[in-house]
Image 1 (tube, one colour):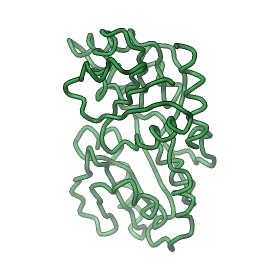
Image 2 (image 1 turned 60 degrees about the vertical axis):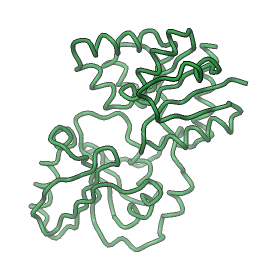
Image 3 (image 1 turned 180 degrees about the vertical axis):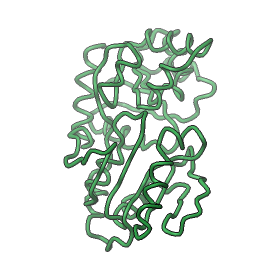
Image 4 (image 1 turned 90 degrees about the horizontal axis):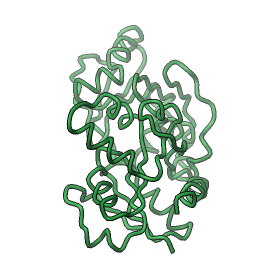
Length: 268
């Protein structure tokens, strides 16, 4: 049995990945305690799987020093930051990334920013939980919009766009939401706009179901889970001006685990 240590961050839905891999027969341990890698724990592991470079880089470096197999999974924010980073941190990240045996990407275009060949593999979601929310409540708001807190996120996730849209459509009820790591704290003085700092993952299906559509605008992204989550809940979904009408097969945990195993076997 292959023993995997998955290194992740809070609020990233990683428990779905862990359960998917366990259902495939892998022995998986998960940790969010990433500041100081535990070499004793690493000695009993075959593969260290880092979900998000910024979180997992120390564990990845320690695993590589112990000659363990390593996998890094890039989301959009990781890939763009990797490309833009300079100085010692960029050198460290570059060492970690190029020493790892396998790079996975939530969207194939992210490979261009990282410069390391790999495989495209979107993260899975609790498909059934979102399907159950479809039609569970009558939508009483129009648009759900994602924009985490902070000036950088406000620029990347086009806060200006949704606020202009709200001014031009005062009859439309709009909700802006962030995430647990970067709660939306935007000060908005528009009567038709509500700002929710974040919502626990288990309550997201109900939040989606209260809206008619999801709009997501961004200049830096991979393949957001929100698109498929909202579709499964019955919303109209628009991503960077394009209407999305179908979900990604790998959102199904079983499909994800099978694809993951196919890629893993190439490096074992």
